[in-house]
Amino acid sequence: MGSGFSARTVVLGVTGGIAAYKAVELCRRLVEAGAHVAPVMTEDATRFVGEVTLSALASEPVRKSLWDEPEPIPHTGLGQRADVVVVAPATARFIGAYAQGICDDLLTATVLATRAPVVLCPAMHSEMWEHPAVRHNLALLVRRGVVVVPPAEGHLAGGDSGVGRLAETDVILSAVGGVLRRRVVGAVGAAGVCASSRLGGRKVVVSAGGTREPIDPVRFITNRSSGKQGHALADEAARRGARVVLVTTTDRSVLPDVQVVRVGSAAEMETAVVEQAADADVVIMAAAVADFRPKSPAVVKLSKADGVPDLVLEPTPDILVELGRRRRPGQVLVGFAAQTHDVTERARAKLTAKGVDLMVANDVSAPLVGFDHDTNAVVILGAGGIRREVGLRSKEAVAEAVLDTVEEILDRDSRYTESEDRG
Ligand code: CTP
Image (cartoon, rainbow, N blue to C red; front, side, top):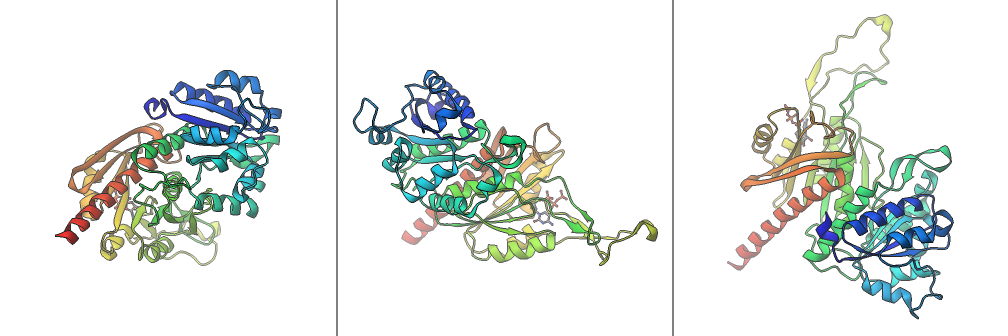
């Protein structure tokens, strides 16, 4: 990880939320990775964490004010020096001010004065995170190219729990590293949108989660899929400027710009995915679709008094095969293969049998891999000899690797089409 950060200037903004203490660790890790960290705190942030602590760990002292700094105009200086501006935690107030262009302190002035990409890591109580004002402001910022690392689920201040806690430091580092890497690869537009991303403006459909196959109105058959990998893929595609539709069985949080279609069974997922895929450029089947379902689900709740039900199962439709049949020219199809043995051979066989461009395979019997973990380790296999091993990483990092490979295919295909046109 170190190389991507070395000699890069990270302006680290810290706003006034309880998660401000975690910014200290983030600062330390960025410096350790070789970044030059220029910290900026809001007045409220200093109520949660000591200015001296952050100054001691960063590469230069904390700045707080537009007026008291040695430089006459600190915000433009910071904005121009930054390779990336990271705000962690970002409060609802800060997000609102930034979205509306209100610069009433050094940090809000800096994010408006910079042409560097901006990464926001919101942290707040679930009620605030879900408030339409916050959603609207974030959606505005994402449309302008701001990268948002969504909050995680877990314990919140005051003994509550839910969505809203600051994303894990590793997840933030991985997102910032991705932004810096793309900055090296291609030009970043004035709005911070990655101009080099092949996904910019394209429609990407992602499916996620395990399907639920009803036995009766209250019981169902499902599997251990959490939907985390699919949601990470949807978020990452949105960060790259794609128009993303996520067909999911879970109510896990997702970036505000992602259009969500909630489904339950394999049949519902098929209808939604096939409809959305009709004009999509990329379709990623990360969902764990049940292979079998009860043939005749009961219409009323089964009772113990009726005895043990005699469940007759039937196969579900294979959505990926159906997508292959209906595939429009140039569309990239990606499948996932969760295996417990002979991972590569089985995934290669599925790659051919299902006629997809990429198969992302993982060994779900390995520790910390796949189902319900925050981490994953995969091998990405593709037609034409593509083979990419991704060791144990966060699901966000795996999503980056998968989408990098999708972009390579889009790039290759477009060059092919362009040279055909010329020929
Ligand atoms: N898939 C699908 N529809 C199904 C089953 C699977 O679209 N009814 C998709 C999954 O979303 C995944 C890929 O196919 O992208 C591979 O899923 P997997 O369950 O590993 O493959 P199967 O064909 O069901 O093979 P197996 O016999 O190993 O279960």
